[in-house]
Length: 297
Image (cartoon, rainbow, N blue to C red):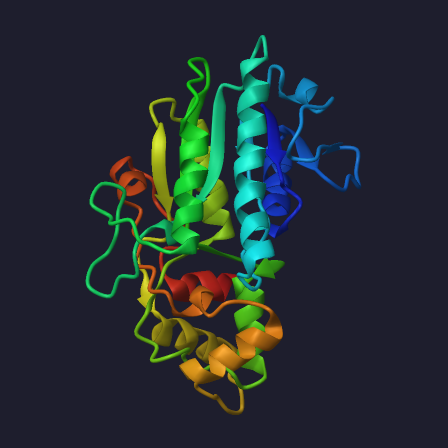
């Protein structure tokens, strides 16, 4: 297949590209900083020569958007929102101009769209949408994606949980914290953690590519969410640090300020389950946190 990944220069996009190439697909990455022959220059805001790569593509995967691992001051809030809305909108405009548009458009979303939940899991059918800045961004992102009708292009939005991978993201962050003795729970540790192994994210996308009946919204999250306490305990069991410090909420507030990030990333309880994927017969290879971290270690 001919696969286009927009905003695919991060660790998740890089992993997807590697796996697709291993399966002998033709992959192009739309990026602001081209470095290889398969990279295509785009700014995520305006139509350019990159539109030619979309012509006749089998699959478009949009992962563009400023990282949320930053302080949520006005400038960053604007950049987080606009980077997602503008890239989605310009891809929609481009698809409308193509003679042979992509058969499938997969757009990133986030499991953070659901409310802080300590009482029950959230699936696509009964999950309750939350409130606040991050949720507002997710809602606007999905609205931008689904607002235009593309009758020849199937659309799927992925509400993806925290993705664990060897080369970046949450796994590397928590591994480093654990090794230096900060592997205790964050806050009171009761908040739920929903996550997905990078290989299962790739497999879920491949599953969607091969099943033409799948449209709409999908949660991509391992079927066995765990508490933050259990999440960190699993890291400690694998890396055996000499000591562990529990990071209380006030400590997180201070640390987040100096690290230029937000405590929401650690303290929000994300209790998300993959209702549609499992009902469609998808089986997660790394369905427990123990399996995931054992493989990544």
